[in-house]
Length: 427
Image (cartoon, rainbow, N blue to C red; front, side, top):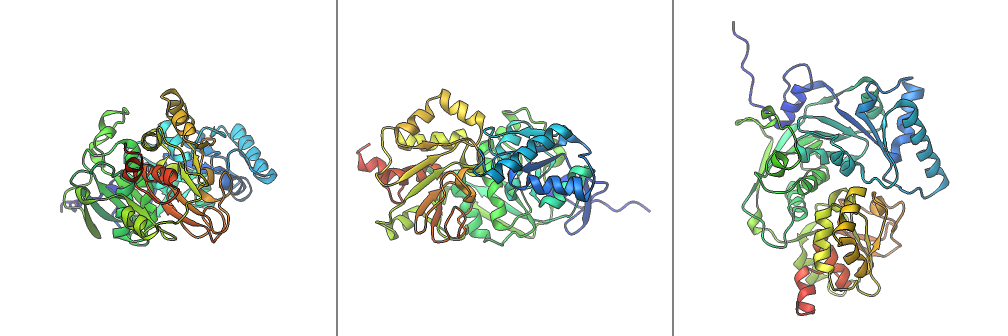
C-alpha cells in the first residue's frame, strides 16, 4: 500500500515541518529545532532566573542565543542598571552573544547580524519578533519560561498555526508607504482577526527588506503568531540570502481566510487612539481634528526606525522647522542606521529642523524613558502600538503613522500630510 500523498502546505507549515521531525499541518503539535533565541533586557533577569534556578541549565547552543539591551538603553534607574549588569555577566559566563547599549533594537540588530535567515525559526522575548518573517523566517514572541526552555534544549514545541493569505495587488501611489499598507491590513483583519495564525503576505517583488520588516512587524497587531512575507525582490538579490525553493507556499495550500489589498487605491493611513485597528485616512483625521495640538512626534522603533524611514522624514523636514510647542524625537533603529544617517547628512537635516536625536534603541515606545508622555498630551508616532498608557500617562493619546506623515505633523504642530507642508511654503 503506497504512503499517503503529502498535502499542499503554507509557508508556516513548511518551515515547521522542515525544522521538525515530520510533515505537519495546521492544528498539529510540532517539536522543532530553534535557530536563534533572542532575549531583551526587560526580560533578561527572568530568563536568567529560569535558566539557573528552575532549569539548572546553560544554553545548549550559546551561539544560537542573543541578549540585546535595547528597551531601556541607557539604563534609566539603578534597578534597571543592575538588571543590565547581570545580563552582561551572564553573557560573559555562558558565551551567548551580547549586543549592548547603543547597538540598537533587537529585531533590527538580528537582521543586520545575519541571525535571521529564510527557513529559520527565531524566537524572541518580544512580541514583535514576527518581524523576522520579512526574510521568510518563522519569527514569534514568547515569554521568559518558553524562551529559557528553547535556549536550554535547542528546541520548542507549538501548535502549528492556521494561515491567513494576504494578497497585495497594484502599485503604491506616491506618498504611500509600507506602513500605510500594514495599517490597512490590520484594519481589514481586525485586532484579533488573525489570533494565533500565520499571516502570509504575497507581495511579489515589491518592497525593500526594511519595508517587509514593517509589514511582518505589524502582523502581531492582528493577533498573529507569525507574519511571513513570501520572498521576492531585495530578499533574492541584495543581501546574499540563500532562499530555499521549499520555503515557498504550495499552490492549493489551505488558508482559513484570504484578503486582497489593492495598493493603487490606498491613501496614507493613521491609527487613532486607542486600538491599532482604529485606522483612517490621514486626510479624514486631519479635517476632523483641525486645531488639535500635537505635543510630541516620535520617529523610530522596530517598525520605522530604519535608514529609509529617516530619509522619508528628512525629505519632508529639509529646509523647514518643527512647530513651536511640538517636540520631535528621532531615534535610529541601530548603530548601523545611525552611522549611515550621519555619513549621508540625514541626521544633520533632522537636527537642523529641530529634532532631538536619541541613542539607538526602543526609546519611548513602551513608556519607560526618553520621551514619556504627560497627562493629556498628544503624540504622533511611527511605532506599532497606541494602547492606553503605552507611552506614558493613561490620558495621553497616541496616533500611529508613517515617517512622512509624522514629519509633516511635526512641522505643522497638528496632524498633517506632506503636501500640506509643501503647500504652506509654496514648495
